[in-house]
Length: 317
Image 1 (cartoon, rainbow, N blue to C red):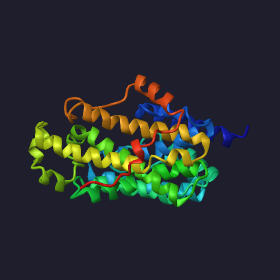
Image 2 (tube, rainbow, N blue to C red):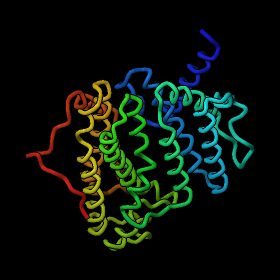
Image 3 (cartoon, rainbow, N blue to C red):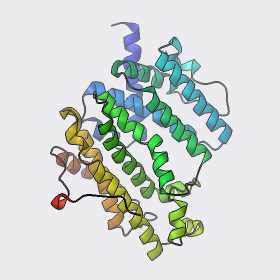
Image 4 (cartoon, rainbow, N blue to C red):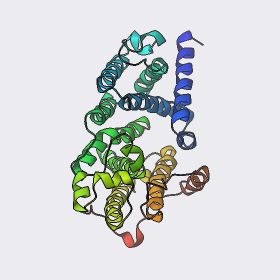
């Protein structure tokens, strides 16, 4: 085996470790797809994880500088230039904070993934735009703003997964966008308290005003009728997006269907947990256990059940 092949295999191994270390759901979900594509998913996740870590750094200038450098390395990686191999000593210029050791392996594996599966660079660029937006914007004026943000922060991942399995149909992209935006919103509702600790508020300011909920009350974790009506609206909107994308798993190649079903079921179950907790996400953060994933895995072996009576969905105000 050539030395380059050994380096690439080692790079993928590092990406898998990074994914498993940071993302509790990855090991379960990844077993539903073939090994070659599992490695590609790990490389994609590692790229996004690295950029997300920069967006959480305290120094704004350093965060933007690191994201810019991450974008530069992406361009080099896509171009297939030698630097894309990401030799450990060339990860970043000496700015603010030390770069992560994973930078080299990430771009070596990512470059291989992009070339092997002909992935679109634009999806990766959109992810970086979302992380830059997080640095500059910690509030969203309305729901439309939140959906627009999700179009860069979440939807590119779904499109990359489709491309990974050979799908480039715009109709499938739109179905995937609905699911991915719903997943992003679900994560926001799940992590209201966590995001507040970072001075990030993803609940639309227009909706907070509409229900008379102040930021101080959010910080206090106050639970009353106003809060529950606000969250009921956001959960309902999110469910409608999930329903818009419900048909996607049955329209893709068979090897991808269980993964998409599991993804859909996982997000919908979190919404169930939020409602079951009477919208108390401050003291009872909803999450999925290993047992939950085992149960959902078995459900993911068959098609998602249609809405009762063939009901249609439309976005609520």
